[in-house]
Image (cartoon, rainbow, N blue to C red; front, side, top):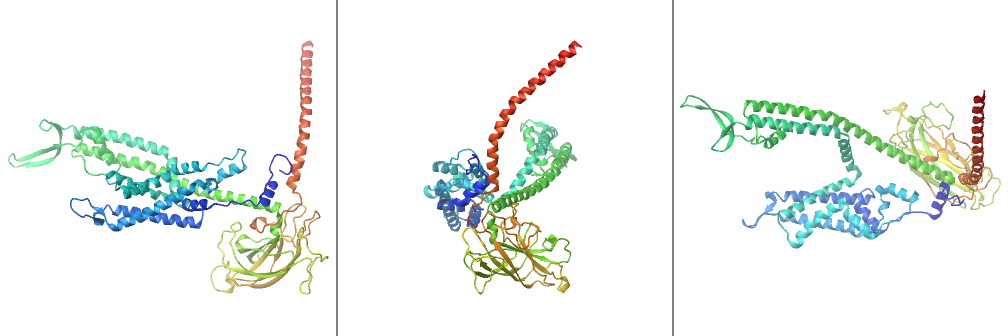
Length: 620
């Protein structure tokens, strides 16, 4: 708090952040734990997660095969069949892997700061910028939380029965049930965000469709009760048989040769009560149709047909609602991901812009090269960007510009796409060469341009001459359509952005823009174009040096943070404004204290005037 205003401004935070070089260093325990626990924490963690999932799949498949007679062996008829030795060995190896993986996480969780995990970034932000004191849990609390986490409880329940069985030879149906818990480890796949997204969409769809599901369940329950009662009346309440003490129903006819006529065949009805009839109703409504119970009378068939039609209508009604909700939830989920990505980019852009505003010297050693297709349709100034569809790629370069050494260097840069301009895949690379001559080094080979003095530079200034040569490019993308004809080939040229001077008086950092000549009809252009820039980043309070050629756009957001330079001694405009506001706060309080009695006095005078006016109205 440099200005003692009891608030931490952005510039103060940035200064502390750079001076103290704040970094997060993970301990060995944390590296092991996050490698085993969080698949998205690193490439190694992702590989470990895939390996564990493969082992879980092999273990589950082996357990399923061990219940088949083909993969079982039996020493004698008196003994129960046992899994084949191969499956037993596979199960043992998988169990050892599970135990090692669980113990690694258990033995390292006591020293793991879960606040640093990606899923806890919101909580970490609240802890850092909030006003509440920060309390970190004790090692015992961390271990207890780890053991009580549902996923870890499942992992422990999956390996404990197997370990117990290997030690004590526990057998029986209870042991088999405990071993079935091992299959629940397949849910470990949902730790990865890419696998859990479909589950999230389905769960949100069910939440949105609860009203339709409630109506469906109510109608189906009502249908089960009504159809079960009707089928019992027409099928279950037939003729009473005293011998069997049960109701019999009509099941068909049989020819009696002695009597010379058909006789009805009766059999015990399966619909012995209304609750027993609910099973038939439920199986019929759900269109399963096991066939264990079915009507045989004409009225029973009518009831069954009505039940089938009712079930089809009831099951079809919520399908459209849930289908529409599913599409809407999917669309909202995609929009939410796009919105999160946009918010993240905006936050990164804000942080980058503010850091470059407070430390603009970061851009002094950065260069941006953009390649465009010259389609002869430019309507703006020479240095203005053309339309986005002519973009062929860009390359960023961090220049090595020491204050006491002449540098000559040639680099090959891979072209990259830029979604902020146009979402397009680009190919190719570009070769550039630069020559740096710092001020104060005058030799026969290097001659200063634009500087009258040859005094050596101090640590508080940075100036010199930078000569840039755009040599060539190769394998560029073709934007003129298909075909091998020269008229269907792009004509590329380059825009070079550098920052040779400090921000202007308005605080905006303007780039110097240089446009090369156009290489007509080629995807492997050779430019060999050269231009010179005079650098002057003196950290004085004087006016900044005017750039050779200013572009219309300050492309601050295009560069990532480069090399760290020391902060200047020049006070930040934001700090000055805060100091002025702090001094004005006391004056405003005094004005407020003075105005309050005046307002009260004015109110009293108004009330007195109103009373006088009322008295005059009464008199006249």
